[in-house]
Amino acid sequence: MQTRDCPSRGNDRTALAGFRHTEERIIQTTIANLGTIVNKARSNGSRVILTTIFGLGLNACERLDPATVQIQAAIERVNRTIRHIAAPNVVIFDSVAILADESGFVAEQYRDDLLHINAAGYRVLNEALGNLLAAQLQH
Image 1 (cartoon, rainbow, N blue to C red):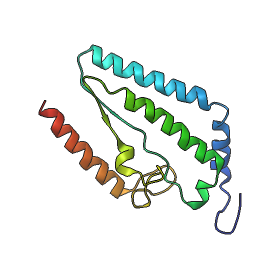
Image 2: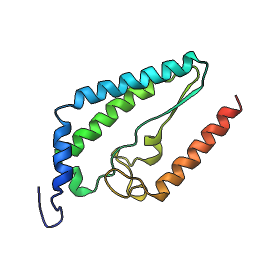
Image 3: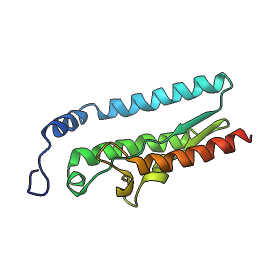
Image 4: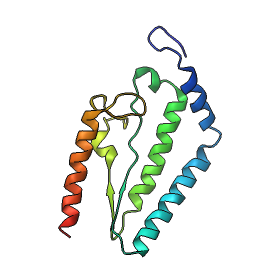
């Protein structure tokens, strides 16, 4: 879609369109890999801190693109699995809860663009992670 307010982004659009054909494989591989990593760490007696994948930082134009909405839905599917991995010695650091607005996308004050958070986003993530690590060290 190209309007005066929403310019075409040829390269991004091409890349996102290719995602649709491999979406399920990517999701399942990501979930399997996370499970393998967590199980291996736990079997070695390690305490695991696993973070959710923060969503996209969509502007009004990008929210209209079906490909970006599809990617956000895939991120949410993986995050549901991550949240269910919580177990003894597995702590979930929910970056989505820290960065997202009410729509589930990265809030405007924390994003630079579609994929990148800004300094304020890193600041709130680092503060929350520091608090989580400090609490874990108490155990």
